[in-house]
Length: 264
Picture 1 (tube, rainbow, N blue to C red):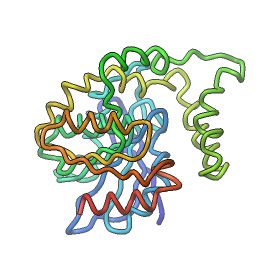
Picture 2: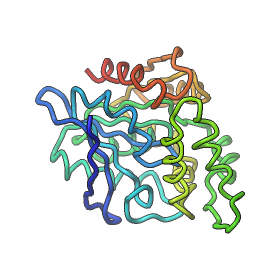
Picture 3: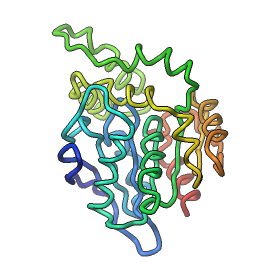
Picture 4: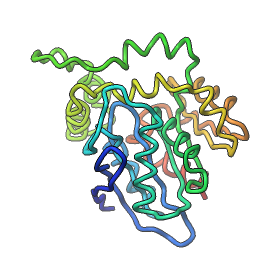
């Protein structure tokens, strides 16, 4: 299944996106929001499985991937505003469905809050719904603006996340592409982490009165995902504890099957 690339105009400039599949009469377009620190490249293995029955669009946040804009300390609200501009450009008045993975869950929820008539179903996979104490603890570690350094050691963390930890489940070509995607953000390398860990999770998820479906895998975010289900009114929690790693890659086909069963 071919993945196309393109641009839409957003409030901070051009927004780059990846798309696959075609719009179908009986299904909504599905927008996928990526996890920190990666752009829409994170969905390249999942999209072909999902695109067999509907059109899939994965945008890059402002200042990430191929998109313009980009404060080193953006907000989830800013991300959602740019995403909504893409939806209106590509899908008109909708309705569309949205899917978030990790920090992308917060963008998906915020997009629904900002444009409730544009978005129908909200599916959140492995939600980082950490309590305020945990967010405050980890924000300085993961969310501080990245300081440029001429020494290779400065990007060791990015290499470990993209290559070392993924080499068993992805090709080295893909691992290198993820590494390049991450470090290309330069001072904004930690921007999406900053947006996620400064988000008022309790207030924003609690405001999602129209509900959402949470898909929780056997991951480090399992308990946080369960917490998200307790914060969102009328939420449905689906636990897929047989998926233990590489949700979007090695387990992409299994994950896609679950996504389809939930949305359909």
